Length: 140
Image (cartoon, rainbow, N blue to C red; front, side, top):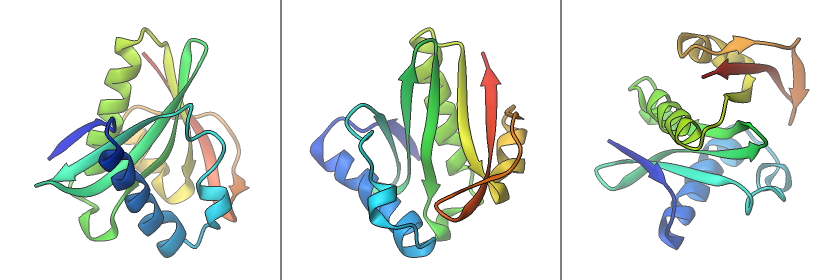
């Protein structure tokens, strides 16, 4: 299992392939919401299991903090620690770049997952793409 910054065109295609499968096909998020105008300013991460893309995520730097977005793992690969490894890679990148915190909007069913990784819920629930979310934060 390897998680890395998606630097090549193929790695970026792999990011979008995983996101399409999870968000657009599985969760029925409209494509024009899932792929947005923040793609170019984001740092994309891709998780591979034996050269097969199985998870993805991105961060956007905003001042002294970053926001994790689009974190996902293919349905048949969940529960194997891949999501946690993606988050650790994004946290490591953030720390290396001297950022002070990482925040995210978690789907409500993933709130406990993020709490186990040290994130704190800092908002009431809200809907995004017709899915219930909470905002969470982790200071470094």
